[in-house]
Length: 256
Image 1 (spheres, rainbow, N blue to C red):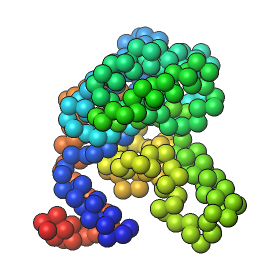
Image 2: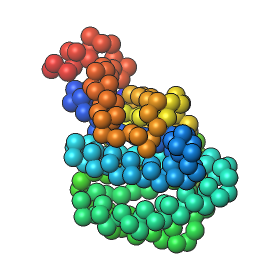
Image 3: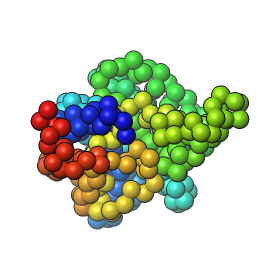
Image 4: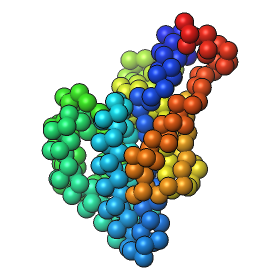
């Protein structure tokens, strides 16, 4: 970590409000089961929670919100549920993109989209093109995404540059790898939240979460509203982020 990067990280920590929040939205199925409803009802309720949290982040001044909507492992779920999830994503895009655009939200998608239907792929491209110049909250949706996939595709990009003679193997470093990753042009996540009671990162943003503060809550995603989010932000604000420094060093740097 360079001196400039270190000072930038220190300055960000001193603000106490995360610039970038990444969330695994877990618990939709269990939320529905508790109410004797089909799992898909939980996913629909989860969409409402997304709207609430996006609005809250935009109003709070958080710069980036990344949501893990569908992992590369989620294809293992029952075929009917996967199909319904894809339909729900398509419907949400058709209904919400214009509203996001009107509220100055920039929408991005990360992941391997080759497995999606042509119609869904088309809507994803249209949504990104419509909102790409917006200057408010950057909303990143990770679909068919996995952290290992992200690192692998970055390694392939770097390997191609070596094969073309653009760089030597000795030039490969963290900075070069990072530049080939998803989200490379955005601040790394300051705060990671997982709802639903599980305490693991589940192959989400493995590279990007290196110095991220982790927060786990038993609250199921459809119930994760502004009050629950505020608790996560308070927890984040109470922590001292050191980025490899000692606590005493951080206090001196933040006081400088």
